Image (tube, rainbow, N blue to C red):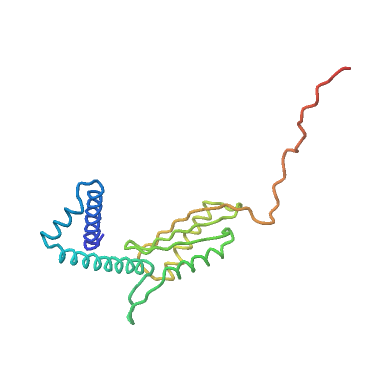
Length: 196
């Protein structure tokens, strides 16, 4: 974590704890509104309160800017070419991976999630498989295809980590149900014999 956001988080934590204790002190009667008025007038707190308000507003705007900037950076991959910078949206990569999944016969549905980190590109694919698929073979092939195709497409040296999460195993439509090996028999007990 970078030092400036850490300092801001610590500042906000301390400020909110102080405000919380202030409200608790008023609620419990330890601090009354008359005492607050006396301190306010005795120490001329009006300019200090105004400055504190401005600082809170500026820090809030700064945090919002950092947060949205971080989200934007994390949703793109950028690299430089001799002609300038190229930025690729992670949603474009996710759509590309989804189309790869649609071309594989063992996959019914694939929902990829791509995250760019300093360590490389992390791809998490949530997959629905057909029930006649061999899960170890299919998942190994899916991981290899995704990794190789994305590496070739992006042309980056950073490692690509692929995780596969199987969410559903679905029988194919129109597939014949397996024949029953044992015929169903009526095992209802016979009524006891009665003599009249």
